[in-house]
Picture 1: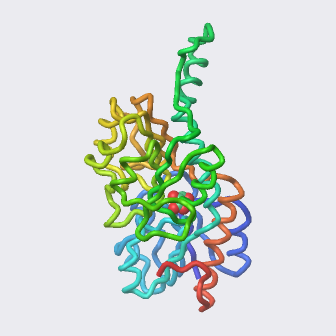
Picture 2: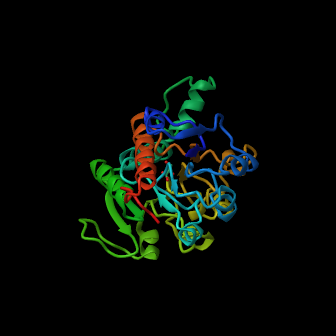
Picture 3: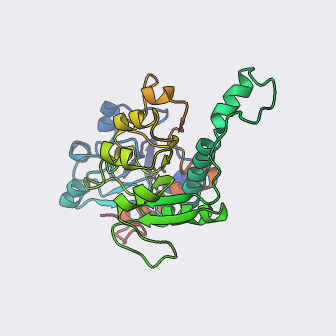
Length: 312
Ligand code: DGY
């Protein structure tokens, strides 16, 4: 029984798969070309993909009828055609919970970096421009008292809210339905009108694709900050580039559309955009836990058991 893992994973999780007697093939290297993915899945019973691998009907067909489980190495599953999996009776699992705190930490890191112009400051000092202290040098935003609007109040949104409160910020949120939480629920348009910082934590679905379109980006308060550690597809990137030229104070983006963002993309030229390469869950302990979770999900399905973290 062969399993294909599309990237090397940190920690002992893959050993666990081998101990269970599975033949495990792990793709070595940063990039996995589509043709290679299609070749490697032939005849597998299980697949562990990352967010960068598009797992659609073609992949499932090439794998063949033996494919029982797609154990995503992620909480987001927008890269998998869930309907196609359902039709074929393939189980799809994910890794919720373990990456909540790490992703919330990175959201705050981006917020601080944008609000206090940390990257500009580092470049300034490294670039040899630091010759004197000046009262008006690289002034940023004071966070205390600002309103943070959270879009998508699941685990990660709530972890961000907790951190924001420690900084003295007021938290408001929007989500599909109001929740019993100690923060005001607002419709999206109202949140955009009130928030000094908008932080996205919703999954990417056909309904949330480009949720922040041009109109909504420009409906944000002048001088506000946009944070996205969820999925790039939630935002109209072209409109964001324009909004960063004068309307918004800045943006902190861990995810982009397209992703990866090509080196020549105009977003990089905006000094008020802090962009990281999809590092939300990139704490070593978190990534090791994600690996173990994906493996446990995969093994459960292959043993005929209900997986701990099913999506389909
Ligand atoms: C996820 O899990 O969905 C993140 O985007 C990557 O860890």
